Structures are given as structure tokens and as C-alpha cells.
Length: 194
Image (cartoon, rainbow, N blue to C red; front, side, top):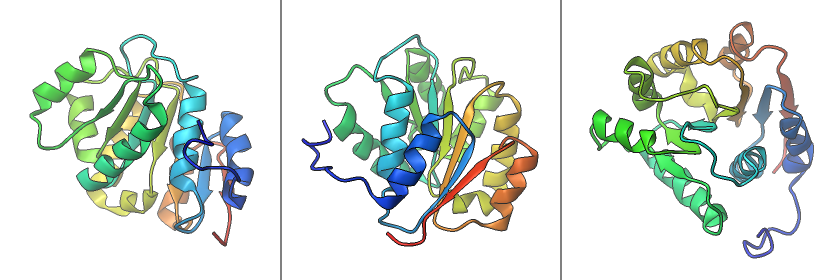
């Protein structure tokens, strides 16, 4: 699969981060743009889920800043899973929340969402987190926004056992504060150059 996508050599960031993510630890992945963070997020999510569709509840949730980022990540994931049975779902903000809830209820393995939509789903009990294995935040700088931060804190309180991975270009002080809540015993992988 990787050869088909013309991925032959891992980046320094991928060499440093993938084994730690695969270990199951909570982790902050800090590296500049172009270092392979998105590819790492996709590959480690697929590895965690063993590229299999199981049950109906999401086993991976990926939080993104806005609907454009969600669409980009959805398209990127699609390239990797087109020959697998994994069910990928993008919570598009243009859809009514009841439509999103019913589509998720049909069965989803990987859920991509913004904080606003995911928070609504949590409040309406529209997403089952009992099978959740990994919760990733792509380009986590957006979590500094008060609404995104508050939504994140609310959501993580109801998740029992799960690996959390935050990807960011910089190790912002507000990200470190999550260690007191859901990023307990988190490791930091930081790579300076791309």
C-alpha cells in the first residue's frame, strides 16, 4: 500500500513518533509543517484498528479545527483505506445533527469532526465512546480557542480508556495544561526540521 502511494522512506518525525504512538502512550507530536504528521496520524490510526471494520461504535476519533480541515483529512484517509473495509465518516457541519447521529449509528470505525459538532454529539449522546481506542487532534493549536478548549474538556471527561495523541507545529503552553486532565503521563516527541 505504501509503495502504491509512493511512500518509501519515513521522515525523521515518523521514525521518532510511530513506535511511541504504537506503544499506546498518550503523546504530543510536535514537528513543523511538511514533516509527515498527517501521514503518521493516518498510518498509526489504521494500525491501531488493524484495518478492520468492527462493531458500530467509533474506535478512532480525530478532531480538526474546521470543516475544510475535516474534508482534507477525509480525502487523505480515503487514499489509504480504499481497499479496506474500514468505515470512515466526516461529520460535515452542513448536515443536521440528527442526520449525523443516524449515520454514525449505522456503524463507523473512524470519525472526523470539529469540536463544535463532536460536542453536540456528546451532549445528545449521539456518539458511543465505549469502543474508542485512539483520540487524535490534528494541528492542535486550534484548541487554544475557548470554545474548542471547553468542548475538548467536556468530551474527554466521558471517555474511560483511550490513547490521546495531539499533533502540533509547536508545543504551546496551553497544550501542556491538558496533562492535568486527559494527557496523563504523556510523552513528547519533538522534531525541529522537516
